[in-house]
Image (cartoon, rainbow, N blue to C red; front, top):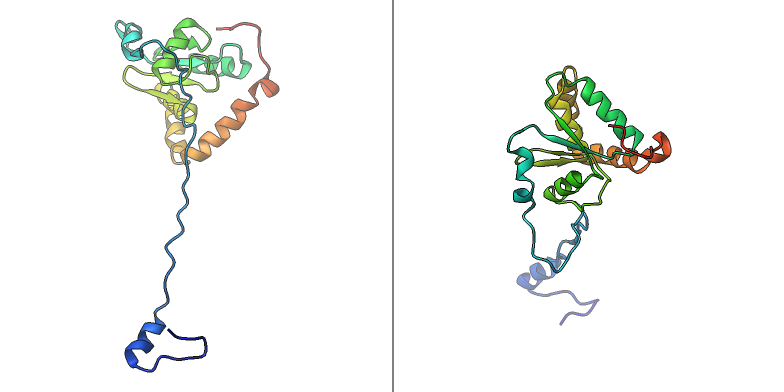
Length: 181
């Protein structure tokens, strides 16, 4: 209708020419591919791991700390927790044990996933830095206060630090041939 050198002649057309089409906002789609590990798929019927592992909490409601039984860092962490848990609020189980594998599946993780400490309570599970902070809440002073302070650090920062340490734990701290606990 209008060439590059022509200008609109009526006021209405002049106003219409001033309206610049606005591009639609650029939308980026992000896909989270792995928030938690996925249990292996099989042709067998789905197992209700909460019911399957309910016996772990029938007579003893204390939470269970799952840890890598051959990791020297993890074994040291368990020793620190045991030494600072005078009321014995937490139970311990190696991730590699049969009970540990069942509790991992209860927590929505693969039975062979040893990438994170896991704290399993009767109604909920915690992984990575959230598990560490929750464990700190159960043990003696000054750990609950330290956990309260560390909760102000954003989860993605805490988990970034956790993942970097966890990914290098064998190189830095070594591993043992069997579970020391």
